[in-house]
Amino acid sequence: MLIPLLVVAPVASAGMYDQPYAIVERGDASAVNKEARVAITKVDGKSTRDTRQTDPLAPGPHRVTLHFESARGTFRPEYREIELDVQACTRYRIVASFESKLGPDWKPKVYSERIGECARKFKIGGAPAS
Image (cartoon, rainbow, N blue to C red):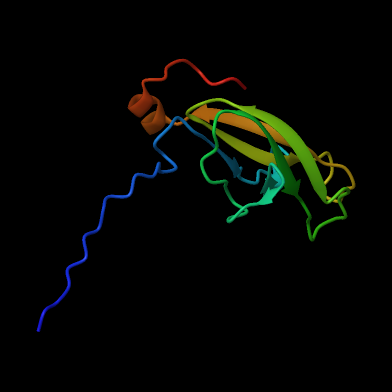
């Protein structure tokens, strides 16, 4: 009995981390800073796989849709869209900033930091833009 052998050619596809990238994720809640967690629901009009963080993004402008609601109060609008010009090898953490735990207003606040492993891999230096 002959058993056919399959020859598998190597697949030439670029992985998500093969080029300089940025990541957008939700930040941590802080009662002291009057900040709460948001959900990241879309990037450039496409739903995210995980509302806690995006897949790696190519550097450049992106439209990020955020969702925020709280059991403590009524906040409006529930969804906000922001424009972020993300830089290579930078992590962006977004929170909902508010004056009162009861609402009604909130606005996105963005923190940024360098992704060390990305910067080393692609030899990108300097501090991220805030």
